[in-house]
Structures are given as C-alpha cells and as structure tokens.
Length: 336
Image (cartoon, rainbow, N blue to C red):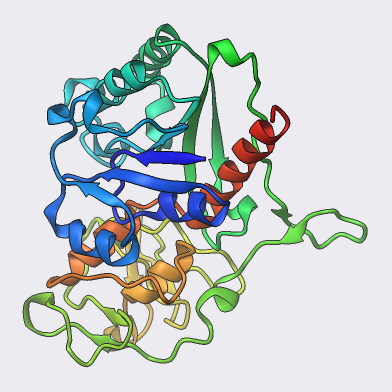
C-alpha cells in the first residue's frame, strides 16, 4: 500500500511504516534543516519542501493512506500551550484540507499528551469533529511507547481514521511489553537503557558553539555547556536497568547518561549534582537516536548539534510507528 507522509520530519513514522511493508511515495517537510537527513535516509521518496499551506491536492499522488504529526509545540504542556490560537496549532486543519480532497483509505496523526489536557480538550474535540465531517470513522488513544519495545517513557496521542464507506474498525495495538517479571506473564520486560545503549563507547563533545565535531563517529557526540535552572528543577537521570525519560527536542534539555552520579534534592523544584560537575554529560545524539528506535545505519546530518537533537526528539519512535502500521496492514488484509 502506498502512503503520503505529511510533516515528515526526519522520518521516524515513515521508517516504521516502511518496515511494516508500506511504500512511502511522497513526503512533505518544511524545515530546511531536516531536508538532507530525510533525503539521505529515504532516497526513493519525493520530498516536497514547501509549507503545507501551499500544497494543493493535485500535488500529492493518489495514495492509500496519510501519516504524519502536525507540529506539537502549540499543544505541549511544557511550552506556551497556545493550541489552536497558534498558527502551528492550526496546521491540523491543513492536514484535514488535503485529506478531505484526496480521500485515502486511512490516516494516522500523532501529537503530544497535552493536546488532550483540560486546557486543550475542547479544541481537540473540534479537530476530531472535522475529521469525521471529512468522511472518516475516527478513534484516538493515549499510548506509552515503552509498551511497544521502545526504551523510553513517552506518552503520545495517536489519532486514526478509516474512510467511513469502508465499514471497518481500527484495532489499536496494545504492545507486547510490560513489567514481565511475574511467572506466566505474557508480556516481555521493558527494553532498558542498558540494552539500548550499553554497548556504545564514550562519545566526543561538540566543538566550539556546539557545532558538529569532525571526530564524531556515526553521530556519537554530545552537547556541552551549562544546565539551566529549569533543567535543574527535576531529576534528569534514569538508571541503566530502567527505561529513559522522554527524549526531548532540544540538546540543552537532553537527559543525562545513566552512568552519571545521581542528582540530589536541594529544595522544592531544585536539584543539584551530587558529585564533580565534570562527571555529568548529556546523552549523545546517537544514544538519543537509539532510544527513539532509529537503527545505526540511519544517519543524521547537521551543522549544530541542537538541530540533530531536535529532529530526533520530534520524531515518532520507529517501533511505535511499526506497531500501528502492522495493525493497518492486518485490517486491510482481511478485506482483500
């Protein structure tokens, strides 16, 4: 089945669908800092570099499905949270405009947990209503990626739609991982940081102004510099035998490596380093990529390290994408 990817980013969602047997035939990404990475890793996909607002339905080939997550900053609880009052928050309606015109068999959209918060739930309900009016039976669910084999606590809202005339119902994947330690449990244990990144050697630091270090091998380099008071307001280390905190779309806010000494509480919303500050380093770009399920042959191109962290942190974890793609594949295989 052929798929078009909107708001493709570096292509984590795309890669998961490809691994499940789908063909990405067209993609759209407006951020020029991502273009080279997408095209390097998806050489057979036509990448449309324009704003989605400038794309007309005839610019997109006829496909079986749309996938993509409109920018999430407007809905994030950590940001300003302007939601539909922000131009970025309104990009959902550009997605719907193209979906309504092309009428693919299905769609999938991904966004942050904040979109269903009390602050934004009314706007999210309006978005769901517009999808229904466009001719789709829809369903949404809050999922945590650790249940799907991603070594990370990451909650995201997945919104799916099936064209109403097909009379099909989406079966959401539940994931195969859980605590998994009880005798007889059908679940597998969570994938830990040790399993995900424990084999990687020591990375190199960025060079001046946090630019790419030419000595870095396969993006195994990390951002340097101080830690803000916001960063120091909570624990930023998960242990080797735990899953990671959410991978952030910011090098400055990247988690600390699990080998670092613990952080200590120094009052309400204040943490301090319990040891020599030189013993603390952020996760490298490759470590973040591993935690987001990207294989080591997926290369990231950037001049400044923050751009690498950003594209990885904004991506959909590959295993989560694949799980939903396989659910679509099973559903449509029953109708053929």
